[in-house]
Length: 278
Length: 304
Figure 1 (cartoon, rainbow over the protein chains, first blue to last red):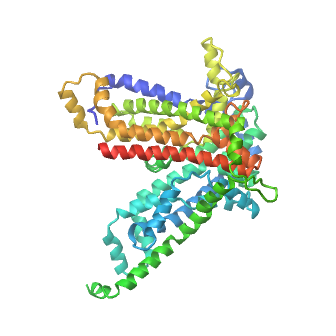
Figure 2 (cartoon, rainbow over the protein chains, first blue to last red; figure 1 turned 90 degrees about the vertical axis):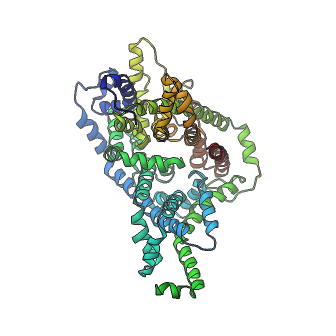
Figure 3 (spheres, rainbow over the protein chains, first blue to last red; figure 1 turned 135 degrees about the horizontal axis):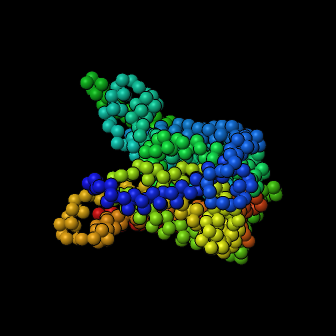
């Protein structure tokens, strides 16, 4: 860490970063401003951010009146929560077995995990779509969640982390008469909290923002996620009504952005350390 | 210690028990892996050699027919070209920007957390919503960007609806989306450079900040940079959201990209076989990039 310089000498650097930061925030600033303006002000295309006539109630009101905002957010919570639950449920025991147990076929399983890391989620999408449509599961939570219940990346991450846990910890638990399953959930996972939170943040951010798979599976409001909600609102209601469209965008972006601002450090670490999978 | 004494004779039974427990623990993951990943991926590979269309009964094996069709398919060729251009713009743009900003942040102690958060914000923002914000920002007549350009006496282009500028505009958004992620990777790489090296450089009479960067920072940041390079290419070759929201590949296929063509063929026209073949091309590109990455990371080990 460089020694603390005087504020005056630091000023050019800070000004440069502030200018770049402001540029970065432009979409948010204009999105927020437009969501408060009436349409005629937006169409005047003036460069003043502050609305002359405050139109927030009308814009946000229109969003809530025209689309089931609560339902979209709820769908997002169900889908992200369901995906994360199964990912952890499946990946943590497998990661533990690969890290700490000796068994025939371990190399094979680990090889399969490494192979799975190479495949982007778009590759199995077509046959999964055909299969879900054959069994009538299109437009269901099952179809939205099931393809992501297996995260080879989670298995890999947990295996790496569990390997660093001391063997004595596990031996002691066995001597206490705990089953392997109990060891996984009551000894290993509580000691792997950093890896688990990092993965949870990575997973939720990825699936809250995902458009590709929900666009394929969900048709209509009943199972639409927030990403689809914005898309529906845009094409159906708010072709050129940018005020209301920006209000909808604000509402759907807010939950994750607020969570990020509250736990900024964890988010950055979680996504940068786990997001390397790309 | 009596446990140890009785443990020895029971060694084989214990090993068998351990193996059984291990497989029981792996079983849910193995089943999900087979059903949701391995079998569908193999099915995609098989479908790529058929003319299967959803809704039609049966299919024929047509060998390399789908791949031959690609070579004559203007839409596909355009999407391949556009994807390469997009990657070619986003990769250097987001890496260079991230490097400059990371160096600026790392050069002092003030505002570190704040600036990192600001630049990282797009990574966690709902991409569909932010694409809508960009649509407003880049709107030809009412958009603030063109309003600002008008103020300077420049007539701004119709960014997203003109085939000359649409890729440029999408790449700009792509740079904005990827910058913060790369920035955090660069910050991690910069923190790992030992401070003593800068002190040593100062003792050896390395005067300017530029020389310090050229002689110390850049070489030591090499592995990070190569890693960021490949990871950015792998990420940006997957461009889909902005295209699906803003242009649907238009105007006149000028922003058709690989994943969007795959999506259209498979899920709007239901030409599963052809779409599967495009999927394989996409997979091939991703695998090639990953192969490049392991090659580069291997090199890092040799030089370390």
